[in-house]
Image (cartoon, rainbow, N blue to C red; front, side, top):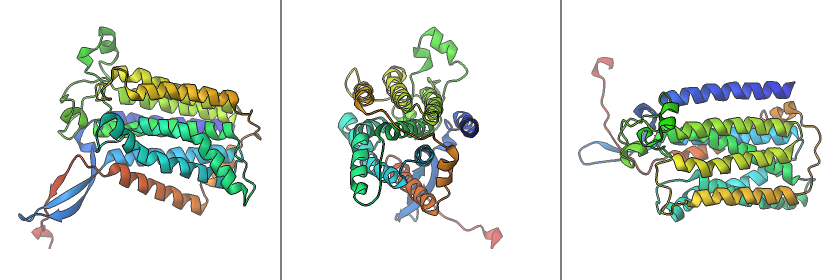
Length: 350
């Protein structure tokens, strides 16, 4: 019963957040979160560094993803130390990979690719688990069952990428095709649900020249599909079906990556079939091989209350806050926009 309450609460919260995001984030108001003065020019004004809502939503989505990972693995009584070390290894590789893969595929130094980073994460996760188990096994009893670990990581990744698409809506990236260029069926389907972006610094406008154009809400579609998949995967995990949860999470996210790019209008590389579509196909095959050759999981019945209790540990709370801050600084600091600031006194208030 507690599992269903947890999943129902998770569904309600995600529904409210997504509904708010879809209605507000395409507007110009929701791109820049803060500006920090950097240097003063000769005319007395300051050049500012912009921090974006993109970074806020990426950081928040990863915070919630790691929290869900800890809850699921804690519920299954899997080593907390091993979980933290394996997660740290994956993040240490995936965070720089988000920019490096974009440089290799798109030839752009000032952009990120979550799709490329996730592909790298899928590839290295089994090895990160083995490395963490071997490293800690010298000092403590640290058994990390492969399939449950991979399933929980896949579910957490699915939730993180789903919520992270709110950042894409805010920045106007990963945008869909013009609605008027689509089939009559698609036009009718999204006539009242399209995205229209405002503001010259939105990527759909400065790159795609799509100011005021109704677009396929591909980011919203991804948000909904991935969040639903994360909920379904969590249910399967908590009922002991780790292999099914693992395959479901990766299959849905990677197959959708292949299909969704046919509805996107942003630059995805120079090939007709993008590198990210190829990565998605390879990831599905890789996961099927892992599920086929990994030993059957042996888990005690997951207890959700045990997993939730881990989040009250002071060390976990501080660690999650530091993780959020790191993600926000890395992904929130805009290198493609700038700002000019001036400061004045309000004489009436002196």
